[in-house]
Image 1 (tube, rainbow, N blue to C red):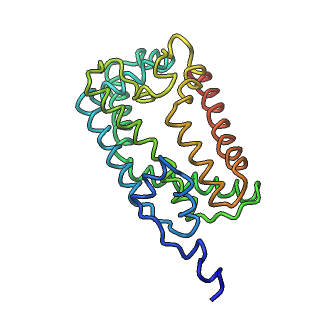
Image 2: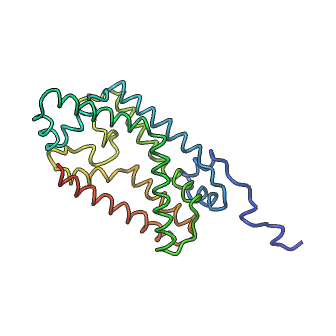
Image 3: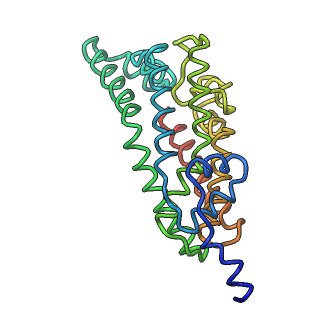
Length: 253
C-alpha cells in the first residue's frame, strides 16, 4: 500500500458534530468552515439556538417593556413620524399605534421564518458574488450552512439584551434597534446626533463585526478563494447596506 493510501485524504476524515462546529466557530472557525466545505452541511442546531435565544429576548421584551411601549418608543425616535401621528384625530392615532405595535410584535414572533428567509436571500446573493465576481466554486448548500454558524455571535447580543431588560432597564428608554449595549449607537440619542449618524453608529456593533469576520472567513473557505476576497465581498455588501440605510434614515426622519 502506498503512503497516500495509508494517510487517506481530507474528504475521508470523519466530520465534526454540529456541537463541535458551534464550539469551533468561536475558538477555531476555520475548522468549522473546512468541515462544511468537505460536505457536512447540517445547520439545524445553530438555527434552533437562534430561535431559542430570539424567543428568550421576545419574552423579556413582552414582560419587561410591552409591545405598545416598544411601538411608542420607536415612533418617538422619528420626529416626522411622531409629529404626523400626533396630528391625527384620537381614533386614527389609536389605530395607527395598534398597527405599529402588532406589526413589530408579529415580526419578532415570526423570527424562525424570517431567519430562514434571510438565510436564503443572503446566501444566494453572496453565492453569486463570490462565484461570479471573485471566481469561487461555492455551492448554495455550503454557503447556507456556513451562514448559520457565522451568525452565532448574534446569540450573545440576544442574551445581553434579555439580561439588560431583567436588570431593570426603564421601559421608556428601550430601543428595539439597539436592544443591547453592543454598538456605539446604544450610547447615543438619535434626536441629538441625527438619524444618519445614529444609523452609522448603530452599525458599528461588535457582534455584527464579529459575524462579518466569520462570514468572510467562511465564504472564502467554502468558495476556495483567498481570504481577502471573502472580506471584500462581505464587508463591501455590508458597507453598501449601511450607507443606503443611513441615507434613507436621514431623508425620512
